[in-house]
Length: 162
Image (cartoon, rainbow, N blue to C red; front, side, top):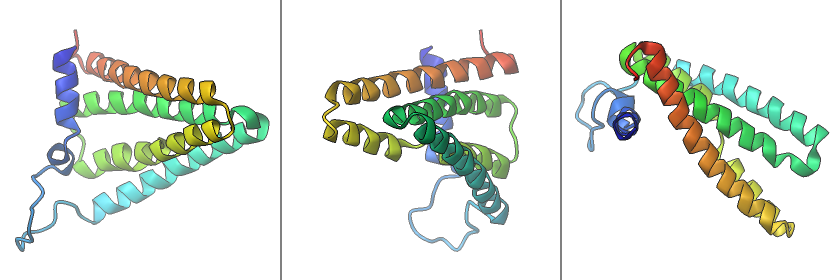
């Protein structure tokens, strides 16, 4: 498992995502991103954000006291999917604009660490301390485990996993 996790960390480094090291100073060279990258990230982000909005709105409407669980579900699904996508793209490279559109745009906009953090603070402020603690623990553990499971599944789907 260590090798798979090391590969996932390497695959999600800034250099791997960008496709080239980021220059520290302007060099006059073409940027590491282009119009296709920006369009893919914008379109993917719009799709991911709308799906997250719909799921959150549904939960807030039907289960207002437990709406934070929608964020847990969203982050869990997103972690699993990003794990699958990361493993898949290591062995079946897609164009960089497509990788960025899916991973950074769609799944980045779909998942939400900031909402998770604010919901944990609000649960504490509402004197629901035990719920807040379990929410933080569950989100952290579940999302990391599902990212690992997703990476393993993606590796198996591409024939590189054991």
